Length: 142
Image (cartoon, rainbow, N blue to C red; front, side):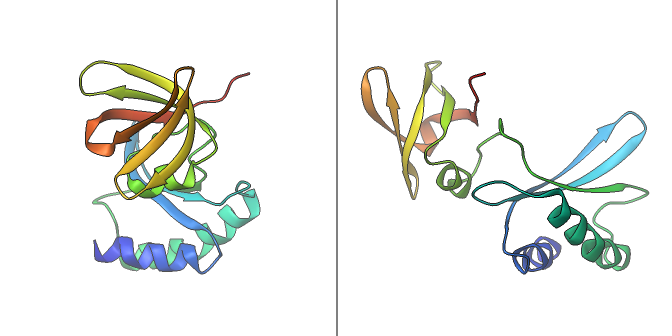
């Protein structure tokens, strides 16, 4: 958790939020992915600048064992929502929810406060506790 706090401080010094950190395997490569978010989108130049600052820090404080590639990027237009902050950042966007009881919900996320969210569906506004949600993601209609 200490390394995540240091990464968060570096990221936020550029005026963006730390959306999440994930370690993934792609083929024979390990990728340490730092996801950043900002209302209005992320510019590739900010990713490059943050990567340049994070790289020497992570050389001294390796986040994973062995060799890895550092990637700094936006979580994308269609992204997973897993924390209360993710929902807060996504107010005004379209979401798909899978509830623990098997129900699926689609609509616009109109509010997020604490562990409660409100989604505007074809049936009106519906409130959900985050504990009811098995998975959630934003989506974009093409």
